[in-house]
Image 1: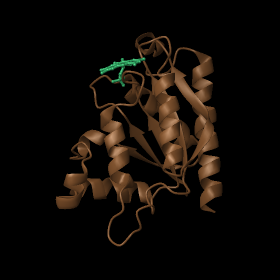
Image 2: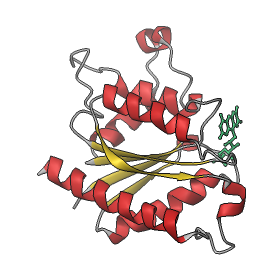
Image 3: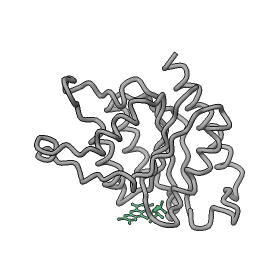
Length: 191
Ligand SMILES: Cc1cc2nc3c(=O)[nH]c(=O)nc-3n(C[C@H](O)[C@H](O)[C@H](O)COP(=O)(O)O)c2cc1C
């Protein structure tokens, strides 16, 4: 069974990215994946600091790293903050990138060789596209294979129907396409 973790870059009540992640999780499960929904609010993670890493590596950083390491693929669903990704998400990615035990500096056991994908919902007309470009670069740097398909939901405050579905057919079909490709690539890479 293909294991996919979905990581949402917002913990805001009523988050549009959480709403998008819900649709993505259903689409991933439809493709036969086993999905772990990663709610970063349930991880006690300070902003990454090298001093903390040296003197008090947080137990939840290790927990997050182990969770990622057990996956075949990672889907990040995140808002854009000031043209980049939220510090909550960057810090989580950074913690899980750090070597632990006797691993080498570049072991990247949480990431190396896994498939990844990105999605964003934003209240702006650009849908968080600039943040996704940066997220792609980060995910490549940590040696995941980022699939070309992606989802941007502009004007997110008007994009969702009352039942949680996307009003427009095109972005809805992109959620399905992205989920299908992520599962296929994750499956192939882990074979
Ligand atoms: C600090 C901050 C910076 C933001 N910067 C951007 C931005 O650069 N581009 C954008 O499209 N939206 C930006 N937004 C608006 C977010 O897209 C909007 O708050 C969105 O609803 C957040 O996602 P969520 O609903 O999942 O919490 C920003 C919001 C915050 C709090």
